[in-house]
Image 1 (cartoon, one colour):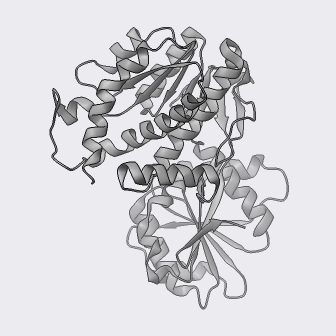
Image 2 (tube, one colour; image 1 turned 90 degrees about the horizontal axis):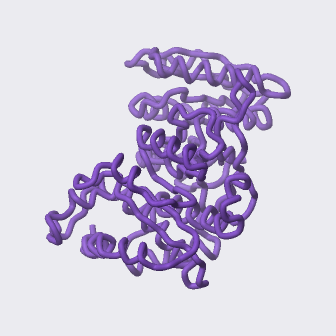
Length: 385
């Protein structure tokens, strides 16, 4: 890790109060896991010229937020920003939330417990809370001020099922899973998605595999006369990689495509030569080829400042701060009535829609329903067709 990062964190410690003292009109709070107390003894950085891995995601999220705010600041936008470290040891998260001033919006990269607390505060104060990176509703219901930007698993399964209906309705679709409570829940989610989908149902074979499954356990379910669409119905990394490694050598005789979960974006092993002939498709709430003007600019600025490529967390932070900061500026206190407005999207399209409670038919929260299908084959990543 390059040595500029420790000095950036120190600058952040000193800059938050400066931001808060500037007399802007609209007030925005940003929560992120920065671990500042863990990184410093006073003003003395603890880790030399390195940066611990656990600090990186929250720091990169904040960097994205800061870059968006810097861009808006060049235009003289009236925003007052309060930044909070959710992992602070000197001031607990609940204390920070309790002492937070009368802001008009909250944007956060938060854990499940933190999401619930911030969502409750947003409901009490009647201000929007934009949960930017946590892919779950955290059990929040009946809260019209809560927005989930990182799409939940039901949205991912809906996208997968629609893709199967459109592209593979006449092919051999096989759903592989482990024997586990979580995988049973995922299978039920897939089945429920099919039951509620419009159009012709996808004929799917469901196969439960043991932990030590082999090629012989897979072969009976493949058809050499058509395309085999294999679904890895598990969030377990070991099972998923084992399934990919088992199917990949069979692709010459059995034309196959493997569909995985949104976590597969981080499986770097799938770039290895042994997976060359297997098309791997997975879902992603953020697909950014980084070829548009804004993405290129962000990448160049990030490289110049930090000597590394920006991760998705940088783009999550930038996109959330830009879109909802702009909406706050445009609608002011009425922004809560315009959370689903299709404006100010950058480098990725959001499709923010209300999520209704099935029992009461009332609004639970808003969610970004836009999910991309990403195809990886021969080391090339593209939008799936």
